[in-house]
Each structure stands twice: as C-alpha cells, then as structure tokens.
Image 1 (tube, protein in one colour):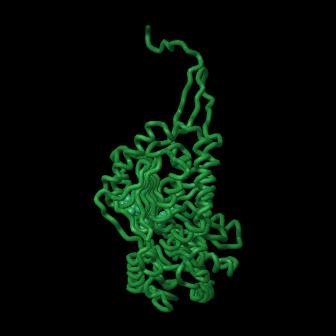
Image 2: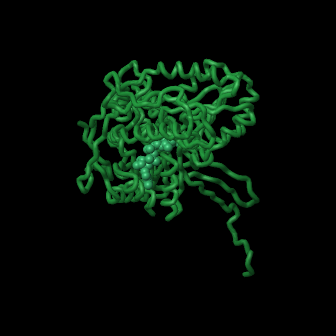
Image 3: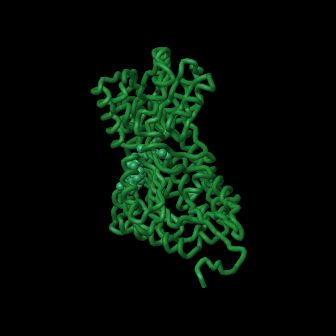
Length: 490
Ligand code: NAD
C-alpha cells in the first residue's frame, strides 16, 4: 500500500500527532493508500517555510527564464511518468483511464504553458505629463495558499501551482482529503528537479483545520481556492483578517440550451459529454438541459436511448465510459438528491439508482440519470448535484431560454446549440456565465481564462489571466528632471 507523506521546507514528514487517514479506491471500496492527517500545526510550519523562502528571494529573485527551466523540467518528468500517474489518478478518483490520461497530458501542457508565458513581455509604460516616465511592472504576490478539490486532483493543482511558481511566489498546497495521491507524486517530482526548500510545501489534512489555517493565516498573501460555493464563502470570511488576495473557482448549475434548429445528433452527443464525463463531477457540467419545447419529446427519447448505453464500470477497464462516484459519502449525497427530485414531483426519464450488478457491488457506481417534468423552483434545478444527474427544463422561445438560463445563483458555464449563428451569439451574450460554448460543451484550454460570474467565483484561472492572479501590479513613476518642485514656499 502506498504511504504518503507531507512535504514541508524540503523535508518529507508524517503528521506530528501520528494521525492518518485511508485513501479509498472508489471502484472497489478498498484502501489504496495511507495519508498523514496534518493539523493547524503542520499548516503553520508550511506557511512559515513558504514565508521564509519568499522573503529570502531564493525563488522570486531568479530570472523568469530560470524559473521557467524548473517548470519545463517538472513538465518533462510528469510526461515521463504519465502512465503511472494516470493509473493512480484512476485508482484514486475512479475516472476512466482515458480521462486520467487526458488530465495528465493537460497537466504537462499547463506547466509548459506557464513556463513559456512568464518569459514574455508583461509590463506597460504610460505617456504622462513631462518630466515623468510612468511604468507598470508585475511582481509575485508572496506566499500563496492553494486549496484544491477532488474531481481533477492533479490538474486543478497544476492550474494553481504552475502559474504561482512561474510568477515567483512560494506556496502551501492542500489537496482534497480523499484524493491526495497524484499531488503527492507531483511534489516528489518537484523535489527531484530541485525546487529550493520551502518554495513549494504540501500539507495533507482536513478543510476545517489545515484549510482554515491557510485561509486565516496573516502570513499568507493570497488564497486560490477551487471547490464548492459553501466552502468558498467560508474561505472568503476567513481571508479578511489580512485582506488577502483571493481567487475562487466555485460550483455551477450550468445551462446547456438546445434550440430546435440545432444539429440534432451533435447536440445529443455534447449533452451526454457535458453531464456524464467524470460521472458528472465536473464544475462546468451542463447539468441543466434547456430544450426548445417543439423538440423536447424527440430529444429526450434519443438522449435516454444513448444514456442507457453508457458503459459504467471500473476506470481501469478499457470498455468503461463512466466510472464510479468518488466516495461512499458522495454516493449518499446523490441518492438524497434523487429522492428530493422525486418528492418535488420531477419524473425520472432514466437512471436514479446505484449499480450493484456485474461485480460492481463494492464500488460507488451510479446510473446515468435524467430528470424531466421539472419546475424552476425545484432544488434539483437550483442546486449543484455534482453527479451524473441531468435536469431538463423546457422553453418556448429565445427570451424564455435566456431567462431560465440565468435563473440560478451560479454563473460558471453555458452552452448553446443552434445552426443560426446570430441567435447563438445573441443568447451567449445574454447569459451570465464565464465559460461558454456554441455548438460544443465541456472544452477547457490552458490558454483561455477559467472562472465564473455570480456565486461561481471571483477572478480567473488559466491563460494570461491566471498568471495575473498570482502577481501584484506595481506603478513606478520616474522623475526625469531631478530638482525641487517648490510646491511649498521655501
Ligand atoms: P469542497 O469545497 O468540499 O472542498 C474543496 C477543498 O476545500 C478541499 O481541499 C477541502 O478540504 C477544503 N476545505 C473544506 N472546508 C474548508 C474550509 N473551511 N477552509 C479551507 N478549506 C476548506 O469541494 P469538493 O467537494 O472537494 O469539490 C467539489 C466542488 O468543487 C464542486 O462544487 C465543484 O463545482 C467545485 N469545483 C469548481 C471548479 C471550478 O473551476 N470552478 C473546478 C473543480 C471543482
């Protein structure tokens, strides 16, 4: 069994109190690794190490090109170990191997993207009144507290670690309790390539202890969090003590709008992709299907036919198209939402049950599920379920589609399917969401900004915006005529 450790100030360590937790493979319900459970004390040690490393300039004073060299080496090592990392990601999260392989490849690209980006021009000069030359430079923010969720463990980690390091920051990273394995491996790689001690620290442990300490600490300058909106709200409150920079990538209940003039099979295909990839445990999942009334019945019939064919099974089986849910606790939450939907009066067009047949009885497998006959006020329409559960809403015209699309507290993603390009763009422009798609769904690129409107978050990860998140902007005004101003009488 894999035994994980924390990595603090360049040293591997167990928890000071000897606390441990078991990491479970959700496909078989068996322990795959043992992880130390840190407390506030280990979090403070890591924060102190990151603070000392930052203040020493050991990392931030390096030329960007040297920091980039480290990032390129990290990318190369991840690539070398891609098969091992993909296998571990699948064992820990349950996702099909091909999804893990995609995530690991994207992680490699993320490190390479920020290694390249940080050496590109990033300042500005301003033409102001003589005799002053004004300019802007970007500097690292300082110590970054990075907190990640369990659905894309390594990838969401890379989305934070790569730009934070590229920009010259030091960091304390906390993965989700249940999925620490590939992050632990990433820290082994960072040690291997020689990232200086204290620059990148890994603390394993709970949200209310380790996570909260990072969010509250006066020595942390920035918090970058990806996770649920409820936790994001709590982190925002905790971060007020020293007015931290804050970046929040939170939950969603994203509308996928299909008009009658859409290419039918393309819309069907992306709708399935939008909700059943990673068993629906995707922040930008198209979890609300908004269907134009005239095609509702035909579309649902075909969608149900396709959903029933999805091969659910263990991620390491090459025929598997959808793996288990990530944990027993999460399975319980999804089952509760099914009951809520039924109690509210919605109808199950398919799915709704745990799967225990054909050797799947020990894992947390769930049927691809579609709810119809919904009302906008239902909890299953308003709340993020975060599983393979699609909720269908009907609309009559463009105006109603837009109104329903915007009728939740979230604003992460949205899709529109129509062969009328002008209509599709009109609708996209009216939808309050940060990540949008036309005739597609579920795409994500290292090059493009990622984040949401409304209660789906603050700020943007990825792309040039993602690097900006990890920098402070400094204005420099240089007097070119060095003599007293005589503003006050002499
Ligand atoms: P979560 O909010 O339960 O946990 C996320 C992380 O926060 C974990 O590491 C957890 O230990 C930590 N945490 C919990 N309480 C904390 C506290 N009080 N202080 C500090 N840290 C704390 O989320 P999750 O269940 O791991 O992930 C699923 C959620 O993440 C979904 O809502 C999903 O939409 C969201 N998500 C968003 C994005 C995005 O880019 N917008 C990406 C992936 C996941």
